[in-house]
Amino acid sequence: MRTISLILLCALLAACAGTRPLPSSAPALLPEAAPPPAEPLPQQPAIVEPPPAAPATPPVSQPKPQPASRAFIAAAVPGSARDRQGWIADIDAAFRHLQIPATADNACALAAVIEQESSWQADPVVPGLPKIVWGKIEERAHRYLVPLTVVKGALLKTSPNGQSYKTRIDNLRTEREMNLLYEDMSREAQKLGLPLDMKNPIRTGGPMQVSVEFAEGHARVWPYPYPVQGSIRHEVFSRRGGVYFGAAILLQYPAPYQDMLYRFADFNAGRYSSRNAAFQAALSQLSGRKLALDGDLLNYQDKAASGSQQAALSLSSRLGMSAAAIQRDLRLEKNAAFGQTPLYRQVFALADRQAGRALPRERMPQIDLKSPKISRKLTTEWFAKRVDGRYRQCLARAAGAR
Image (cartoon, rainbow, N blue to C red):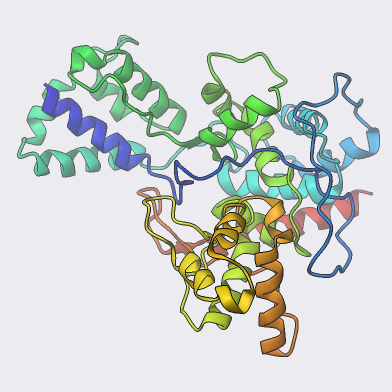
């Protein structure tokens, strides 16, 4: 039974793999500064003063809903959305608790991501999920030289909810259901012969496909405003929790972009990936090294230096910076503060001079999206542009509703 249980565990790990999960050792993406301004950002120089840091906790008294702001939210939520008033209320509450201005830009940005990620389903259905899981189980069974019929027979064991594990797999529809299945397996780990310290492989969920790791980290520094039903992980799979944490990761940080398109890219690739990809392009030009423009300046998988790190260190004398100073600045890559570091300033100053013009400070991260749930070649750029199209359609609706 232990081998069969491990087959199921490995299959769930593979079937739940996200498109591009945040490396487990990367810095947590937490609230660090004031939300974006209400109106589109004006043209500004590449180097700007950092905005003031956000408080660790929100004020005790929350601002009351403003009719004009709620009108923007109402215009952003399509009439076809099931329980439309519930969506409007949850978005309005998320903006107020997170201190994000309920502008047309922000409401439409959030609505565009929800539509892209779940089509306004609080617990989005993953098409063909049982087939994906059984495919992974068969693949693992073959690797362990165990007939699939034997595995299915073992999975007839009754799970804590009264159904067999096989029946639950056959009826899987959403990541929330997969999460519950995994939690039941974890509770029965000893009986099933599984490791007692298993890490839950379901990393994202809810209407905005938010990272559970992000939500848990965010709740530690910015108190979650609702009664927690079970755990923060469970809240991610709810509509109110998914919208709340989705609004936080999308809008509750100072993005130095002129176009919302790059916020959408960051939502998919990680905060500041678009800024960092532009930095990588400038670094590549200066060093003569070909770099992956993926927005990751450091390597979080092992101790090996990343290509961007090596390129920056090779320019130490030209930058007038020590290796220690370069490393110090690179460690800020996931924060707004990186854009104010000597490394960032010096690299762009030299690259601009070499190019004879000001280089872009934002660039689309070049990342292929990989997941059992994806059956065709998709990229971060594809995702960002799809969401941006929905965002612009929403803005047009909001303008017509004024």
